[in-house]
Length: 454
Image (tube, rainbow, N blue to C red; front, side, top):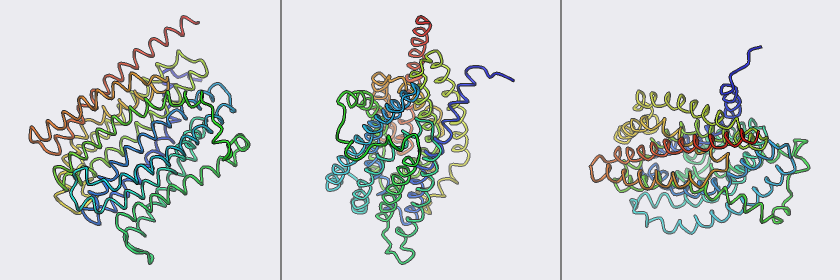
C-alpha cells in the first residue's frame, strides 16, 4: 500500500471537507446570480437598484457572518477533542447570538431604508431599491440561523446535507423569482420586490429543513437546545466567541466595505457603470466561493488539529490549501480573460452594460489568484484563533491601499469603472502577500513550540 507524503495527505483531507462546503457556497452565490440574471431582464434601473441595495445589505450580512465565525472554530476544536457536549453548548450559544444579531440588524436596516437617498445614488434607483431593501433585511434572521446550523454540521463532519439544502433553496428561489418577478401562475408582477420575497421564503425553508434533519440524528437529537435554553448563556463562552468573532467580523467588513464603497463610486459614474459592476461582481463572487469553501475547510481542519494536539501538521494543512487555491483561481483567471464578453451578455440585453462588464471581468482576471490566497490565508489563521493581526492587515490592504487607489485610478486618472476595479486588485494583492507571510511565521512558531514540547 502506497503512503502519501504528509502534505499531500493533509491536502486530500482538506479537499474532502472543502468539496461539499465549496459546492454549498457556490449554491449560495447562485441564488444571487439567478436574481441578477432575472432582474437584469426587467431593466437596467432594477438591476442597478439591486446592485446598490445588495451592496449595503452585504455590510450587515458580512458583519453577522463574521461574528458567527467562532461557531465553526470552537465546535471543530471540541469535536477534535471528542467532546460532543461541548459541541452542543457552542451550538446553543451560536443560535442565541445568531437570532439576536438577525433581529437587531433587520431593525437597523428597516430604519436605514428611509435614508437611502443620502448615499448619493440616482433617484430612480432609490425609488426601486427601497421596498426590496426592507424585504431582504427580514431575511437576515433565517440567514444567520442557517449559518450557525450549517457551520455546526460541517465542523462535526457532516457537510453534505447542508450543501443539498442550499441547492434546494437555489431551485426554490429561481422558481419563486419566475413567479413573483414576472407575474407567472397568476401572481402579480412584482419586479425587484418579487426577488426579495423569493429570497426570504427560500431562506426560511432552508432553516426549517436543516433543523429537522439535525433532530433526526441520534447523536444530536437529545443535545439540540430548546428555545428556553437560548436565554441561559455563559458570559465566559460569549466572551470567547466575541473575542474571535469581533476581529473576524472586522476582517470581513474591511474587505466587504471596500467593495461596497466601490459600488457607491460606481453610482457616482452613473447607472450603466453601477449595473456593469453588479454583473462583474456577481461573476467574481461566484469564483470566490471556491477558495472561500477551501478557507472554511482549512479553518476547521486547523482548529481540529489544535484540539487533537497535532500542532506539527498546521503548516502542511495551511500551505497545501494555499497551493490548491492558486491552481483553482488561475483557471478562473483564464476563463474571465478569454470569455468575459460572452459571460457578460448572459446577464443583460443592454449592449452598453455588457461591454463595460466585460472590461471589468478583464480586471477581475488579474486579481483572481490574489483573492483566493488572501481568503485562504485568513481562514487558516482564523482556525488558529489568530485574528487581531490579520484584522490590521485587512484594514491596511483595503482601506489604505484599495480605496485610495480606486479613487485615484477611477476619477483622478480618468479610467472610470475599470480604474476603480484596478484599485481593488491592488488591495487584494497586498492582503494576499501579508496574510501568507503571517501564516508562514505563525505556523513556524507553533511547529517549533510543538517540537520543544515533544
